[in-house]
Image (tube, rainbow, N blue to C red):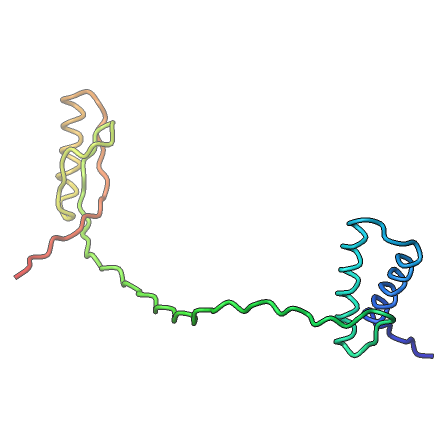
Length: 143
């Protein structure tokens, strides 16, 4: 045996109709009852529009909300992709002191001179000096 699928709209309409019959039998219950009846009538109207018939609810025309004038959607602007400027770099040997402050730079082929300078400064000043390779941007001449 196959199960029968229950229509929730029909069940809701039946429940609303039973609630209205209860309210009519008991009489008016104040402002809250009026609000409840208004909600019940709206539910019955919704079921009437769906093709179902309410028990004893008067058919009221449902007020349509005013449509707001919508602006047409703007076309999205294409995203501008900037390619990063490629900066050419060169490697140089830099002599640093203990505070990581650059003291002197030497061209890449002059590593031996940079090492000698660091040893000389260490002996003269009594603090540590060391050599590290550093990349520097190459300044291009604009003509």
